[in-house]
Length: 405
Image (cartoon, rainbow, N blue to C red; front, side, top):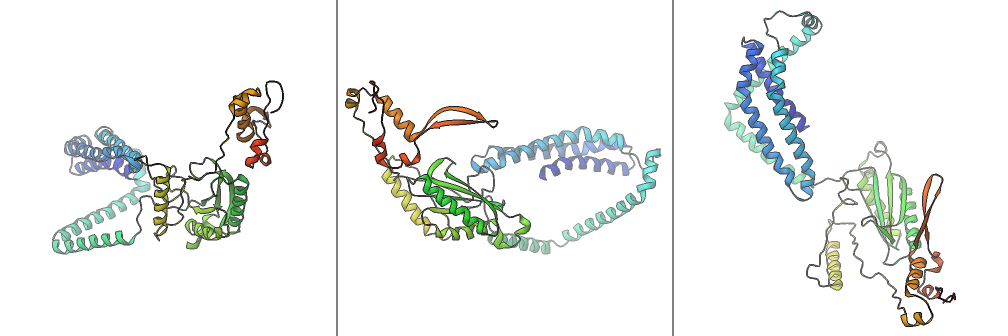
C-alpha cells in the first residue's frame, strides 16, 4: 500500500500543478512547462531522500533484515520508477490530454459532458467547498497554537499509554487453522512405544469439538523433521473460522485445551504449539535459543548448563511448553569384535560389519516400479529379532569355507 501511494503521488503532483496553471489562463503546453519548472526539483529531492532512507534497510543483518529487505527494495525501486514517470510521461500526457477551459470541445467531450457533466460539476463544487473548509480550518489552527500544542501533548501521552497496554511482539501469533503437536519419549525408546503414544494423541485431538482431523507421523522429530525412534509429530486441522467465533475456540486456546488433555499420557513429554507466524521462522510458534560450549568443557558441563537453564525457565510463569532437544543419555551398545579369532575362522571383518549394518541398520538393495510409482527395497531384520541386546549375538556370518559362524 505504501509503494502504491508513493508511485501515484508524484504523478498527481504534476497533473494538479498543470491544472492549476491552466486555471490561471495558460495553454496546456505552457502550463506544463511552468509546472515542471516548479516541481522537477522537489520530485527529484523527494526520490533521493526516500531512496536514501529505505535502501540501508536492505543491509540490516539478522532476522529483522530478512523481513525488511524485500520491503526496502520494493519501496526504493517504486520511488525511482515514480520519479522517472513524473519527469517524463506525466508531463507529456498532461500537455496532450488536458484542455484549456475556454477551448472548444470536441464531439467526444461534448458527449461525455451530456452524460456525466452534472456528476462531474457536482463533484467539483463539493471538492471546492471541502478545500475551502480545510484551508479555513488550517488558518484557525495556526491562530490557536497553545491549544493545538496541548492537544499534541495529549496525543503523545495517549500513544505512550497504548504502547504499555497493547501487547507487543516482533511477529504476532496468528490462527492458521492448524496446530502442531509433538511427543518426545525417553532416549532410546522404540518406535512401537512412540506409535502408541502418537495414536493416543490423535484420539484425544479428535475428541476436541474444535478439531477437524489429525495426521500422525511417528518416528519424526520436531527438531529439523529428522527421523527419530523416540519422537513423533501430529498435525491437527481445526474447524473453519466460521465455526470458531468465540475466544475459547481460537488456535491458541485449543492448543491450551489439548495440552491439558495430554496430561493423561505419562509415557512422553507432549506439547501442542501453533505454527510459526511466518513460513521458515522456526518449526513451531514461540521462540528458541541455543547454549554453546565455547570453552570446550565437555558433555557433562553442557548437560549441567542445560538442566540449570531449564530449571530456571520452569520457574518463570510467562513460559510454557518448555522442551529441549539435548540428549546425552541415549542407550548405546558397543560390540567388541575379536579380530584375531575372526581371521582364524576365515571371516573377514568387513563381512561382520556388513552383517551388523544389514540386520540392524538396514541396507538399500534396489528399486521396483508398481502402480506407476518407484519403491525402494531395503533389507533389514524384523523388529522382533533386533529388539534386545542378546539378538546381536545370534547373528551369523558365512566364513570362507561356507560355514555359518
